[in-house]
Length: 599
Image (tube, rainbow, N blue to C red; front, side):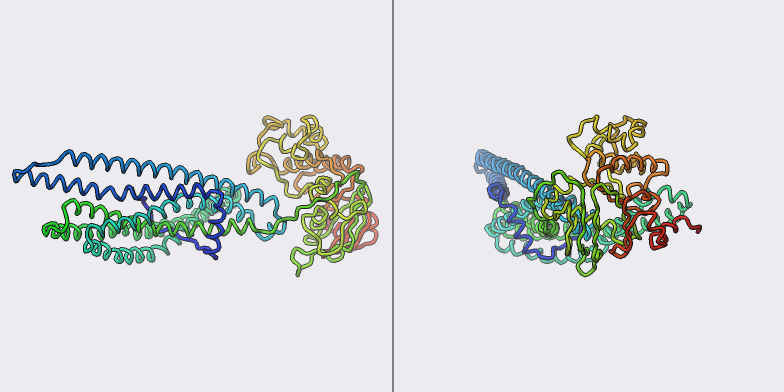
């Protein structure tokens, strides 16, 4: 049965089709033996199927001649010969079906194993990419590669490989069989083919723009539905139901019209193609009857030829569809290969950090996310072991950048960062990050139990150790009030716990990791005042004998810091403690006092 197509698909083309196709074929090298079997089996399956109509025509000829012979007083129908032909025909079709079934199973195995390994490669690649890659790419782009592109490759490989072999074999084989029956009727059948191609191209060109509009309007409608669901409370709060509904109805109407037009125009294809095909059948029947009367061909040949002419146009349509699928597959492969070829973080074998005291020194540090746009100019600072260091300044001053450089999320343009007098480049990133705990402003939890999320800070920690860390972060009592307590499952959107609870859990996670150096990036920005006081107490206990970096916008939270570094445009403009900086009536004092000014 031919596959039903609901109109031409919008094909995305690769930038370098030949180059990507070569890479794709090369990546299938480990499946070479299976692919050879698939090609052989697909070829044999098609050949056996092609021979069938010719044998069936022979049986029809014997039946017709026997019937004529019986009327004229002859021997009549030779059922024995017809039976032998039908048995051979049945065997051919059974063998063809077996070959087709086996090659289909092997092809599915190849495509699924290939995409399975491809997904693993992509996931492994994510863990090896530097942070700067994700500065220029959104998570949606990477997610699209893992889901859409790899799925497209898997489905296209499964469909196009077999279809390409069978369609090519069928076209050549059927053409040979038709020529063997009648050259004249073959030319008549082939003459209709250009007309079919012209009609198909015309319909595709007219419907293509409507299919593109359909995709665009569908994306808009889906986006609006997502906005309505996610912003439901805001819509209700501002009484904007009618405006949202009006906009949705307008776009939904456009979608309906574009779908109706695209389906109507593409729906004309099958009736027109059937009409042209029927014209071909009529011509074959007329000329076939004429040639049969003249004794040039048999009645069975006419039947065989009609069957072959039908089989001749079908693989041509399939072949065109396969080329479209191939284009999409290569375009998807190109994006996947580009992702896999992205430069990785260098693997390092550095020394282990042992018995860290916690001295951290920045020497002439210069850095920019882009070389032509420097963020940190000439940063110098010496932090002694156990000091509580607060980094303050306006948005974009470089506060978070400094701690990212300490974690080696990015490499310096020039200068050096030292821990206990030794350059951090001497240590592997894994060892360095193992010794530094970090609590980010955007609290992130994984889908799973609260216990698993807490244990993420130390995978070897016992349940008792996890609970002790939770108590230090003053989150134990809160967890006990939640359904199932520590076994409560946090959903993917983390919408079943509050922002403040999430922040407390991430702080407890950092406590459990027991780092030598601690970084708190706006760690208390999302909690209420009472919870903030409890966290400050926990942090004071946690930061004993640890070098701590605190990034804060609310300056009231860092009054007891040993050192406050005030940053502006990538430089330290002031340094000191809270009292000394206030007495200087400087930039810090203006920042601090601005929080209490009446607006």
